[in-house]
Length: 423
Image (cartoon, rainbow, N blue to C red; front, side):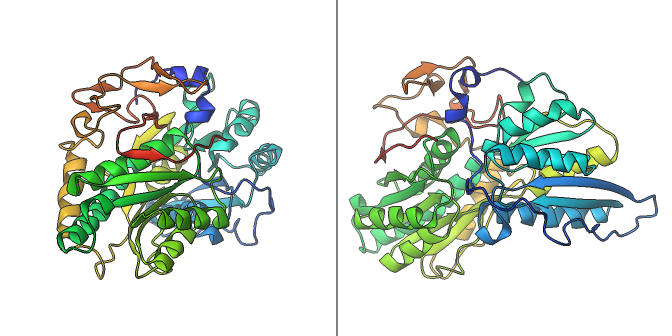
């Protein structure tokens, strides 16, 4: 991954960088019983290696969203590496706040002898970076973040995945459903309105809902979108209320960049459709939820943990998507999806994998009526300024090309921001 120091890092990067969606409330810092028990190992004919890994989580596995998805990755990679003769011994810190408790958690894991410490929330990185200099023999990872790869420390890392690719595919599912409703006379073309529940007005969220909209628009040309920001990564009540307000405003499709399942249940209660994030939400809204997308963190975990086990270095800034299976779709609800959706998904996913399709193809959207010709970012005052690297080239905005952290903050035509929310 090509390194560079973006202007965003020097001027309010934290505002527009990524966010690891999670609950910021401080909770228990105790490691549950059994989490330090070595994972089972299948001998492969060679010597078994053991790596002790710390994982600091902003929530717990019960959120059925962001942290649950990390635990899914943890469990999957433990099994994968066992087959390679690598035993992963985990020590997990649950419900850690984006505050000094995170610094304490990193210190505790370092003193426990962890060789690798993974921080799963955007707001954890500043606290992690207070600890990392004192433990140069330990590798520290800040997931969904952007400061570690360009600092002067060799033992700090950033990692994310091109989740916008999955958002685009989810948008196609939504768009096909709305176009089917138009074709069947159930709604008019101008009633194809998406309601999107966003956490904050950060680049990751903007990038995601823009990709989603462009996917929908590619199969339903009349679609428009309304975005309601809730100012929290995980507040079930706020998310549900926002989704309900969007339904009341006439939206017939709800999607989300937030942690809870309440947007899905609100959509079902309102008799509209939904696409989710981080988890399959069909179980809670079988009549509404069409599909979801998530990051498969086991792909990156396998890469990083195996490197540590073998005494090898690994990238300070890592980002992949569908090309390496780091971005995946949850099961399609074929009982309610439009006819031909599965085939269309397979077709477009292959186009994304091969590079034939660029999600942010500048010929497919406009900004104030004009085609985007230069990379734009928001400064700390909320004004558009030219970025220090040109992300628009070869007919597309190249998201996460210069760093893993998304930097797409452009407000394109067709998407109405009902409010804004900065952390």
